[in-house]
Amino acid sequence: MKSVFRAGARVMVSVAALAAVSVGTSAQASDNWPSQTVKIVVPFAPGGTSDVIAREIAMRLQLSLKQTFVVDNKAGAGGVLGADSVAKSAPDGNTILLGTIATHAINPALLPKMPYKADKDFAPVILLGKISNVLLIGPGSQAKTVKDIVAAAKAKPGDITFASAGQGTSQHLSGEVFRLMTGAGLTHVPYKGSAPAIQDVMGGQVPMSFETVTVALPQIKAGKVKALAVTSAKRSAQLPDVPTLAESGVPGFDVSSWQAFYMPAGTPASTVAKFNAEVQKIVAMPEVKAKMEALGLEYTPNTPAQFAEFQKAEQAKWAKVIKDGNVKP
Image 1 (tube, rainbow, N blue to C red):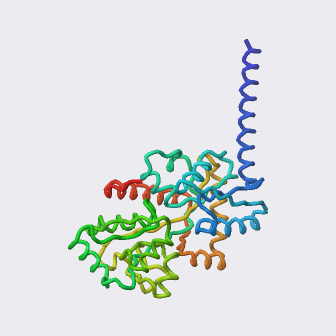
Image 2 (image 1 turned 180 degrees about the vertical axis):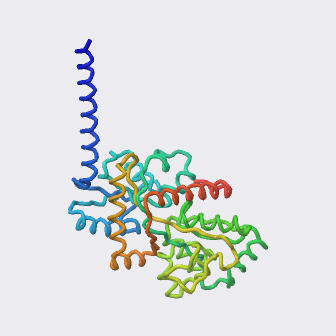
Image 3 (image 1 turned 90 degrees about the vertical axis):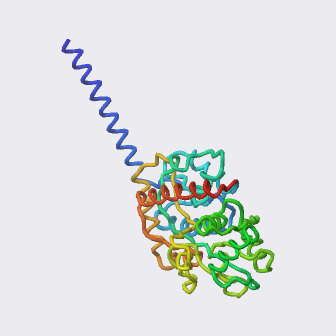
């Protein structure tokens, strides 16, 4: 009987030892991150805001972490294709997503079939910044204020149109929130991108549009369009003289696009924390801060937990807007 107990004890000790080794190895692997090349997936085409941000930060990460970081553009389905590839990657910290409001807040509520669950298949790492949209009118527009637009749209429901970069974009949904909050009977005209949308506003084919500050700024400075208000809760650093919609008679209006980093769900918390801390150091660098501000990004330091709470609120917000506005993909 004693020999049986001794044998059982040896087995228990062995199992405990193996568990300790396993935990130690996992922690060590996490502490040693990154131990191999890291891929940052950008779910959009090269040259856009997401791509520029990812490449700037990847370059800095290589210098600070002494490891190779590569940017992989996987465009398609409004960001779904690239995001899904990261959701299905190993949770080892070697595959990272440059996600956006589209991949993690709008598409999950808008698209009937999603290959990933935005709230479960990812580990939120850090919110890189918000980008305000701006309400634009063409040079020939008779409207002088936001209240003028609301009054005209209520007088002739459906007659006044607004352009956007496409169905389901943050620009489009800025218009939907505006319509819901003011009761203005606006009609949406989706374009295949920002360039043709703003071109038709400049040409007078469409009286108004919602566009990102990044895209609109050169045309505003050139006098080809007029900015009536920004959609964010605070004024944009790039357009300090342009009031917010809340200041212009639509209290509580707050819409911003955003960019962020994600890792696959299950990635060790220490790896997520290490990456968050490293990115915070990088975006605090004066030269990086200046580049991000030039892109319209307004950054506030945040932890993975704070970013997770922000994402939760955004998902609830856009699900309601899409439902209430009867927005279809």
